[in-house]
Image (cartoon, rainbow over the protein chains, first blue to last red):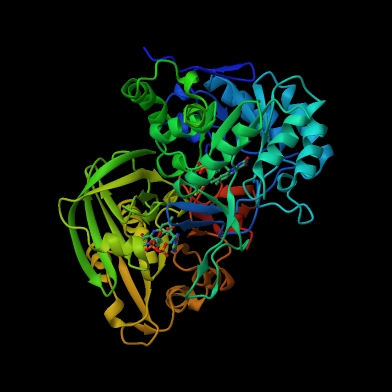
Amino acid sequence: MVALSVNLAGVKLKNPVVPASGTFGFGREFSELYDLNVLGAISVKGITREPRIGNPLPRIAETPSGMLNAVGLENRGIDAVLSEELPWLRAHFDGPIIANVGGFSPEEYASNCERLAASAAVSILEVNISCPNVHCGGRNFGSSPESATAITKAVRGVTGKPVFMKLSPNVADIAEVARACEGEGADGLCLINTLVGMRIDIARRKPVLANVTGGLSGPAILPVALRMVWAAYEAVKIPIIGCGGVASAEDAIEMMMAGATAVEVGAANLIDPMASRRIAESLPALCERLGIADIAGIVGAAHDFQRTK
Amino acid sequence: MRGAFFTVESNRALAPGVFELVLAGDCSAVQRPGQFVNVAVPGLFLRRPISICDWTAGSMTLLVRTVGRGTAWLEKVVRGEKLDVLLPLGNGFDISAVPDGGTAILAGGGIGIAPLYALAKALLASGRRCVAALGFRCASDVFYADEFAAIGCEVAIATEDGSRGQRGYVTDVVSAYCTHGRRGTEYLFACGPEPMLKALAANGWTSSTQFSLETRMGCGFGACMGCTTETTHGPARICHEGPVFRVEDLKW
Ligand SMILES: Cc1cc2nc3c(=O)[nH]c(=O)nc-3n(C[C@H](O)[C@H](O)[C@H](O)COP(=O)(O)OP(=O)(O)OC[C@H]3O[C@@H](n4cnc5c(N)ncnc54)[C@H](O)[C@@H]3O)c2cc1C
Ligand SMILES: Cc1cc2nc3c(=O)[nH]c(=O)nc-3n(C[C@H](O)[C@H](O)[C@H](O)COP(=O)(O)O)c2cc1C
Ligand code: FES
């Protein structure tokens, strides 16, 4: 028997597989296909104070080995999430629910975090300071250590529940942003969000996305995510949720060996609705094949090569 | 919705760049004409949404126009090949909205005629009169006119160059089929390029009308919010609450 459970800042997950925010809604569509309880945790769609319709269509484009999205944080707003979505998910899923929190100012982040943390359904707050598709006066809070610090500081005080900061890969030095969040008391990190990209329709001579740019996700970004998780793992002691391009149990193990305690599966859910379950169910056999008895023991394992060199 | 492998039974060319696929597999979950499937294409990341043109318990027909890499791959599939498909997706047309004994006009522009075929069958089976108004560029582009006629549907064709049927657009044939050239008691279903749908709406089809919309999709089953459009009832996912909308619900 392979031990699959992992611990995220005191929250126990029965396995490390977590559907990523924005690719799983609140689980409703997937619950028609499988019992959500096979999953380690669920990160729900990003939540803002006001309901948001998001960006104009088209807001999806295909890329080599991935996709761009410019959804722009469409969600029903925190009131509907608290009164309808979270109770629904709680009734259909026994494991930890991760609330993915958006915002447009430090004050909004703080108040959203406070209200969501007060819900018994929520175990972890995942603060999205890295959405490339919404514009706060041209600023993206995850793009500099200073603004990441400001948001972490604003949300840290409002709850005793674990706060994970979700970081952007669109930065010069990910280790610096990671350290800034840890320094302000973040309980953990989640990385990465999408990379900014674009496509052009050559027949129409214009960008495919109405928003011009969008966030790149899917297998195309796996190596970038691995390298960033790797760098963050070297920089901080707090646990890391690794995310970006994971589509198989092998990818999940690779992410853990880079330094992730748990692994989020994003775009893979969209093209194969069974992806998260398939990955969770493939882990035991893969671990056995790799001689892994306790999956928690491989977190950051690939870093040891430097010490044994 | 579920994932399934379908086996290609036949693939035949209908017109330049347009082909018909018949796929064998379990279609028992398909409920309404206007629903669609999302087909995986090897080597391409996203699935391709394609309308169900017709179905039985054990097979379905798709009509496809080749426009890019995914549809070009589909054009080459041969009998016996397996396709990875998600189905059934979307809401489909609501035929109960057509008054008993009423006339339905089914307006299809180009490949947009695909979902109208099963719709015509369902309407005819329920005793409604059915006119298929089909628009193409020229005579050699015309497809499925005979299939519509064979099930007892009146067929009116428009071609842009006048080489077959009426010269002009689908909108022109639709007007010609209405009382005094203006819309009367008929009910309209339409699927095609957005300019065609907008022209129909501008021609007075602002009620008793269902439009099937199209946009680029991430998942096709309601998870990614990649396809949301605004309606008078709030945001609606084209893949899930749609692709068929009552025109009065659209915020155009
Ligand atoms: C609900 C629905 C039903 C459809 N039914 C049919 C049908 O019955 N027959 C048919 O031939 N076509 C249909 N289409 C359009 C079909 O999905 C596109 O032509 C196809 O995805 C193009 O793929 P490609 O790889 O050949 O083109 P590319 O241009 O190479 O595709 C690139 C990306 O853009 C997307 N894309 C490009 N054009 C469209 C489009 N018009 N609509 C949606 N996504 C697009 C592709 O899915 C892919 O993700 C339908 C679309 C929708 C949304
Ligand atoms: C359609 C879509 C919507 C997303 N919405 C959110 C969101 O609301 N909040 C968030 O933090 N990340 C969001 N993301 C980012 C994912 O959670 C994830 O970080 C990213 O896609 C990389 O992982 P992947 O390559 O496995 O998709 C979204 C991604 C996609 C594809
Ligand atoms: S395409 Fe994903 S929600 Fe419609």
